[in-house]
Image (cartoon, rainbow, N blue to C red):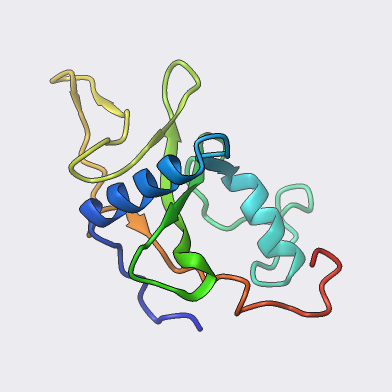
Length: 150
């Protein structure tokens, strides 16, 4: 199910799919913010990340800016996909700005709010693609029939 190298999707598709969700579901949530610390805790719980026991038992992972970073998952609909009604989660990295707002890091649209102090310009987030990812699989059909959440 996973790729060896996740590929970002085109920003035009991401905008179109998110807009379609927002038009079709105007009273529903547009997106969810997931703090990096919560994602790390989840990965620790399932054993993907393993603590080395250092730093007061918490371990280290060489995480940078974990307390001010996150992932935002936008609800979206791809009209070309029939499985699961074409519903998608579009994942975008975020970074907290000086006002405490988590800003999306998306090439060509919204960039990291890190300011180059010498020039007063926004720093390039060094993205290889658009910064928007869709590696989700809908339920149905990718369900756990024994899950207590279904």
